[in-house]
Image 1 (tube, rainbow, N blue to C red):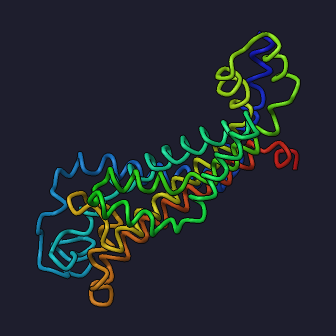
Image 2: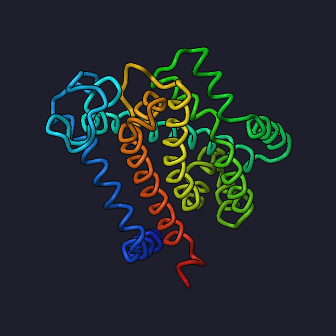
Length: 286
């Protein structure tokens, strides 16, 4: 019982610190609102985001369209609500893929060291010096722009920072007494890596994973702006990319999805900063 309390204590304290952070709570409320609208809105509306609803370029606050229509006559409000699902899905899955690759390679490099560390770090440096956007564009172009290929491309090019962070954490923990004790009792390498060291290295990795979601959302928007979005799935990036030629005459078709991306990324960043403050013992002491 005492051991359980000792393990849970720091996490409870971190949760209290997070709950006392006004910026983090604001970020949670903002992200919760975005999720509620994006996930629940399509179920309530039951409309087709690609359907022509009114005259093209109808301005906002008109009788036929609350937020106006785009250059084809599609309702901006409907496409905005439906587009949130694809954008958030790409951001979450791409971030999960990126963090998974980064943690796996970084853990192997930091734990084993030596030749394994050298090889994995050379691979990391190779991907780090590649122009991420250009490499993602090549991958998406070769395999056709779909949500799957876009998500895979973002995840494959954005894991290097997490890998280096994980390696640093494992180098810090691998020779400490509790890890040596596990080796002494014959624990396997897999147990030491995933059940002993990783739980202690999680706080900075959780913050990194949170911020990776916002980066993935911006990455998807950038690809869609360049014309590499999935044309069969409405997303905020596709809304901006398809209307970029009409930004002066139909600004609302670009401004509203841009504002949605801004609010979502800001919310994720505020949550990440709050987690950093709550999970960092030095910052908790301040």
